[in-house]
Image 1 (cartoon, helix red, strand yellow):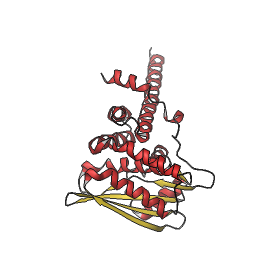
Image 2: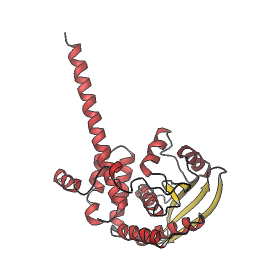
Image 3: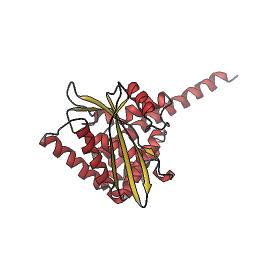
Length: 258
């Protein structure tokens, strides 16, 4: 059943490298910003994946501005994994600066999630990588069902803190992206975030299984489309590598035969 679904969705998506808008970035001279995964400080492991989903949505929203060049989430994860930083808590300023230098970013946005009295609190720090200075801090608080509203508040605040004013066209583009994401609803957003979590841990098949169905729920969501394209692309590469290794092992075994 899943195989048939994935084949049907294949027509709607393409590998990340071939998808328009898959390389968020502005014009020459645009400020380079990396949005790191948000740390989970709620005390509940259920929120572990959510920090990835929030970061992905912020990257997509902020990329609507031509005055910002956003570091791709996938490239960021690859580099941090290579440096064994993927599992570190990023809300710490020194760790964020280290990651920012590795990524070649001018600014780093790092955040954390906390929960109390049935409300979700999202804290964000904007850090200038060259000096380690915390330029601005922001906080959005509200019930979890208002998650998308809280994320939109933070996107608006980050633009303000970076002294970036959106043109009417860019503001409309960001609004449409946020509107499309809201079609997910909080429950499906958790599935999306879990898919990103699985992908970051190398389980690309599970990532595709979690994210793929969301294309039908929120067909206009660019962030979901890109994430599914990336999961599918990486799953294909992993399958190809596994087949190559199996063939090599079989060949070695053949040569060892008496």
